[in-house]
Structure formats: structure tokens, C-alpha cells
Length: 234
Image (cartoon, rainbow, N blue to C red; front, side, top):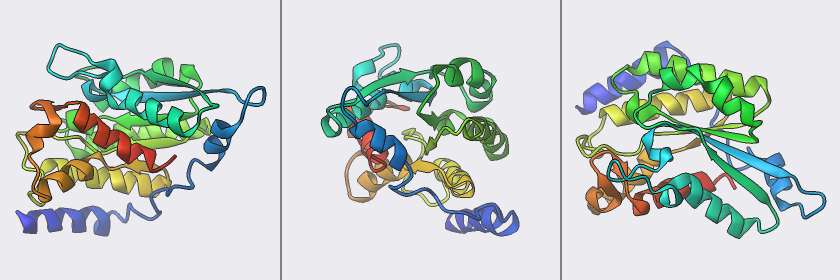
């Protein structure tokens, strides 16, 4: 399994030469953070759009949706603690069960129409049935559409599925994580490594089930991990 994972990485990075840049660091949102610090009447409304599947939508144990305990609103809570003068809208354009091919079809209509100041994209968990190449192409279209409008983007690596051993090298979630890291580096955009957040909990001896509401949906404790990964940019 380890050899398979290494071979995948060599092929992905070596042959394609895709990862030629660097993932954006904490300075990536410098201008946005400056806006968040402004007080009335100099401040403006900041729109954060979260685009993806059931996890950012707030599905816990399906069909229950816990919007205020999901990571978009947990991120908002943390942002308001850090930037008390800011007016921030969290807009979730995510749809349960959707993959990135479906998400790209409505990207202009449902995402760009909100005039976002920042876009988060979280589809990898549901993209596994499509494969890496199709997922990469769809996410790349969304990245380009956002950057064409000078909108910064943060990609999210997948949160867990308890049917996948996140500690096993080269597992499918890790492969999608590496693909997204390569995209983020190539475009010099942000990346919140949700997968690493959960994997670290497991490798440190904690039970993954303690962070999950059901097999493929985190509970509030799991969503806190994702929000923690996002907040490194703020």
C-alpha cells in the first residue's frame, strides 16, 4: 500500500510537473483581513461563500441539518471573536450529495452572483466515484472562474469517511488531498487540510468515531477541526 501511494505521488508530481508554485500562506488574505479590521463607517459587508456537498451544508445524521454547528458558521463565530467590528455574511451554496461536476455547472449562477470576497470549495469526499482526473478538471474550472473575478479561493481536503482507513498511506482520501494540494500550489491559492486534521487525531491515538455524526458526516467536534484549519488564514 505504501509503495502504491509513493508511486502515485511520483507520477502525479514528477511526470505532470503540475505543482510548480506554492500553497498560499497566512499572508494570502492580507487585503481581506484589512477590511475585516475596519470600523464603521469605513467597513463594508464581507461575503464568504462555502460551495460543496453535505458537510458544509450542515448534514449530521441524515436527514438532520445542524447549520449552526457546521464549519461555515463555526468559522463565522471565530471570525467575529477575532474581528468584532466586521460585518460578515456566511453564504452556503452547498448541496447534499453533490459532486464537483454538478457544482461547476451552477458556479456562476449560485456562487459568483453573491459577489464573494472569498470562496471555499469542498467536494473531494463526494468526488471519489468520478476519479482524480475529472475532479481536478471540475475544481480547476471553478478556481479559474473565481480568479478571473479577482476572488481568492481556499480549497478544502476531504473530511473522513469511516469506511476509509485515514492512517493508511495512499488511501483514496489521501490521494484526493494530494491532488488538491497540487492545485492550490499551482494557482498559489489557499488550502485548509481537513484530511490532515482528522488523520492527526487518529495517529495520536484518538477514535475517529468521536468526531463523526455518521459514517461520512462529522459531528460538531469534527466541524471544529475543519474550522480550525480554515482559521489559520485569518
